[in-house]
Image 1 (cartoon, rainbow, N blue to C red):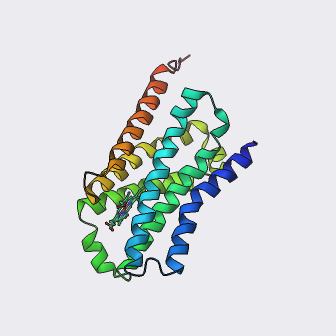
Image 2 (cartoon, rainbow, N blue to C red; image 1 turned 60 degrees about the horizontal axis):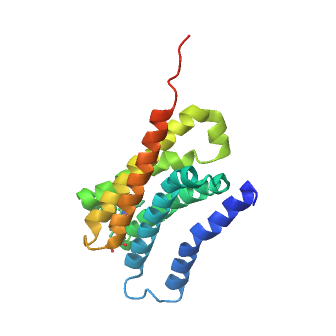
Image 3 (tube, helix red, strand yellow; image 1 turned 90 degrees about the vertical axis):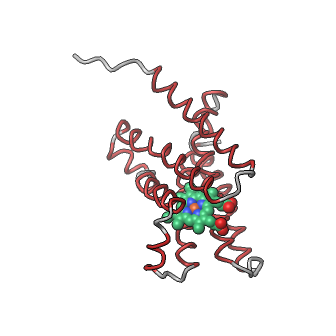
Length: 196
Ligand code: HEM
C-alpha cells in the first residue's frame, strides 16, 4: 500500500466511531441524554486514538513494519479532533453557559481535560507537511514530544472520571508506559551530537 493509501485507510478507521455517534444522535438512540453520550463517546475515542498513535513507534521497532507509519498522522490528528469535539459537546450540554462552565472547569478532573486539549492544539496545528517543512524536522520532533504529556494528562482525566474497576484504564496505562519506554530507549541510544 502507498503512503497516501495507508493514511486514507487510517482516516476511515479513525472516523468510523464518529460516524456511528452521528448515526446514534440522528436516530434518537441517545434520546435520554444525547450530549452526555456524545461526551462519553468522543472522550473515550480521543484517548483510544491517542494511545494507538503513541504505540505506532514501538510497534514499528518491534516488527520493522514501517509501512504503517503514515497512519500515525490520522491517528494523532484524529485523536485531537475527537478531543475538540468532546469539549464542544461538553459546552453544548450546558447550553454554552460560559459563567457556569468557567466555574466547573476549575475541578481537577476537568482541568486535566483542558490541559490535554491545550497540549493537543500545537500538535494538531503542526500535523501538516507545510508546518513540518517550515519548522524543520528537529523542532517539529521536539514539539511532537508533547504527545506524551498530553496522553498522560488524558489518562489522569479518564482515571478521575470513571470507576477504577474499568479494565481499559489499565490497558491505556500499559500502552503509555510501553510508548514512553521505547521513546526513552531511542533517545538514549542516539549518538551524542559532536561540536566542532
Ligand atoms: C476542556 C476539555 C475537556 C472537558 C471539559 C472534558 C469533560 C469531560 C466530562 C464532563 C466527562 C465525563 C462524561 C461522563 O461521565 O458522562 C469526560 C470524560 C472523559 N474524557 Fe474528557 N474532557 C476534556 C478533554 C478531554 C480530552 C482532550 C480527552 C482525551 C484525549 C478526554 C478524555 C475523556 C475520557 C476518556 C472520558 C471518559 C469517557 C468514558 O466514561 O468512557 N477528555 N470528559
